[in-house]
Image (cartoon, rainbow, N blue to C red; front, side, top):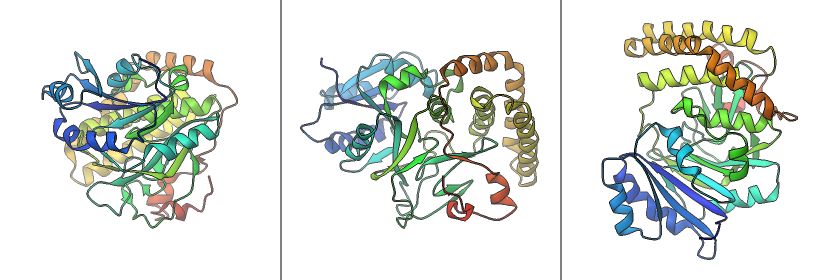
Length: 345
């Protein structure tokens, strides 16, 4: 089989209902003349998704994993078997729109220093709003807190075209991520210790440290059924977000910044814990403590990752890091919208 220009890799775990609904839309969105390949990765599902793909979509390549070792491993194992110029990593809870691939691929083709890009990610059930996981492109503040154009903390904006510009960002959402295959592998791919959550931010940060750009392409639009796979605010999500954020900072921060930023984040996490308790979210309180414990207990392992990441650094591109505290802006100054930051990334 010849090497396709784009491999659209749909990862699924027990989401047959969604694949039945959205796989045909992915296939229909591809221009007939394009050398693209659609691949479904069955991450050890128990819902007969493999049989469905074989019987109803014989033109779609199926990769079956014997054991489920998490979202990250689903891609780590499958992408090692896929040879293409570009990957489009897409979650099973994404509804694509017609022609969503072309603006993203055209953008990647226009500049070899662009490593990855994401489409505009809209809410599946609130069609006029951005979706939490990506919105109009991701950024972080100088303390490592992620946020998006169109989504600050838990406030999501309606889309009025206010972010309809091709824009350099800091991270692209893993819900629908277009990326150069060679750079994906050169950067080390998704970190399998993350299991799920913030793995795409970590990957994009490594690519930025290698000097590349991450971009937002508003002409490509998808709808995301957010929280379908792991509910927003669940204890497991809280645990992985807090632990993985600390690991990501340790791996990628410039020299010496982690010496004060990581201890400060511990203190800020404790404030988050107290707020959760005050709000009555007792089931999520232990998740933050567990995240801190695992970060400290396995610190030598996480630090060894920093050593490997440092070997990749080459004229780091720091554009997209908000130079102030987004958390302070949101909670203390009541700036709930991206535009209220008065910042031009």
